[in-house]
Image 1 (cartoon, rainbow, N blue to C red):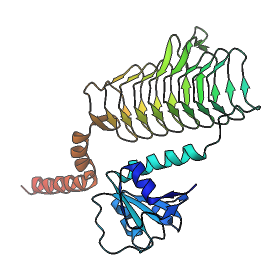
Image 2: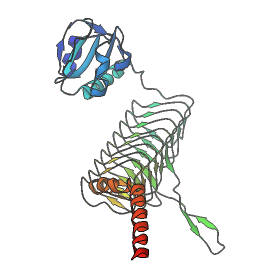
Image 3: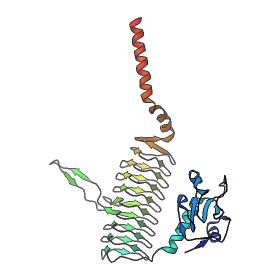
Image 4: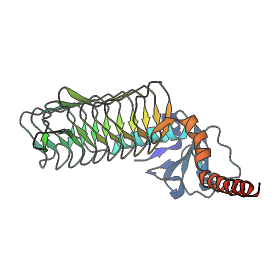
Amino acid sequence: MEFSAEQIAELLGGEVEGDSQVSVSQLAKIEEGKTGSICFLSNKAYAKYIYDNNASIIIVNKDFYLEKAIKSSCTLVRVPDARLAFTKLVETYHQYTKKEPEISDNAFIDESAKIGINCSISAGVVIGANAKIGDNCVLHGGCQVLHGSSIGNNCVLQPNAVIGSDGFGFAPNSENDYQKIVHLGNVVLEDNVEIGANTTIDRATLGSTIIRKGVKLDNLIQVAHNVEIGENTVIASQTGIAGSTKIGKNCMIGGQVGIIGHLTIADGVKIAAQSGIGQNIENEGETMQGSPAFGIGEYKRSYVLFRRLPKLKQTIDRLENELKTLKEKF
């Protein structure tokens, strides 16, 4: 489908600078713009690509300053936030081009499972006994929603996500073996949740592992039994969350973060990538970094010191030698 600059500006609440009737039918990165395509520029680090760009339309922030002329064939659409505007445009484009929802004949769905309306379920999906899938959900190939799991409305499960696997629970016995702890609970995903590819969410021992509405989980994340993740929290790839930890709403957690079990993390907390969380975070909105993690202000001050440790060690060695010489002399 084709859209004119005028139509796009109206959709995004923007202003056209150039030919309002020029039309586009493709989306492209700012580095790869070509005739008939539309790009966006929000990060100033990529500004250099705008001046020799062949794209027909480029979305930019209202306050973006052109240091020199761009090609006359390129029209700008100025908006308050170029990145958000392009996201909205992509979603609109997706709505026009997406296929009608369908359930593949090669999906396995237990007879006792309940599936909502307008769901798209791809080949290789497994939906277990007594599982529930809400309306308008998309389950990509190979993902599994195991017995008793409950998925809300408008949820997306990327390929090979596993919802409701057994938790990692074993107890040593008198024979010095490990006795498996049976997990009788389930997993609950509320509305508007997205789960990344190869992410696993374990069922609760008793009760539910709960992913609240609006949560977005990246690929390759492990969520253990009885964890609760609050509304609109986002977590990046390769993070692991141990059992029974409660994470607040509107948190942002970077990649490769490790969080031990039975902790409470307050609302609005930000955790930098590769941090290790070993104690409760009680202050709302706090930013943490390091392993073990502590407040980011203190971390940055400490980093100034420990990055200089080799030089400080050399200074200490020199002073010790000088002191030894002085003692021998006097």
